[in-house]
Length: 238
Image (cartoon, rainbow, N blue to C red; front, side, top):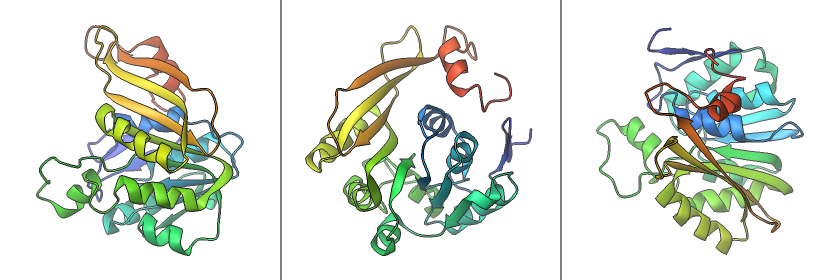
């Protein structure tokens, strides 16, 4: 497997045009999201198109994916067109703000692995900076866009570091998007530090379901059975 190509069980991802490469976050949220009953899915900030392709593998839905960057748009189009689900995935080079403002479509599922570095220093490359920072898509803008195009009974999935997740949850709740499920992700089973929160929001309030997932036991690449079970439909080595 070359550095510029990431091979999964049912599709491959080329990523030489993208600032934001394939990472664990995308695989985690794509694996955790429940989309089997969805008819329409939107992937916001698709990057390489990995989450859109995971959604296609897990459902029979029509999938739209958006990204503001030219390189990511071209790369996602290429990866989608070379997959067995090309007829169900459409890529748009648009910001969420523009897409939501002009869309009359409602989505059963909206999913995103968004930019989240609010206060850290910018990357020197402009596209990489956009992929990592909230300047072009603030949390407030994300919530406004999602509320406009999510169906009444729809589900909105997002993955964020723990601090940013806490900030986002507070904003979402004020806008009547309610946290329904939470997966607390730790790198090591022996470590209490949570690295990521994967969250499911809905318009309706319901009792919160919480789980904890550890990626590794002690020792590098000694993956937990829970992690292998979660991602096993995608990673070649599981």
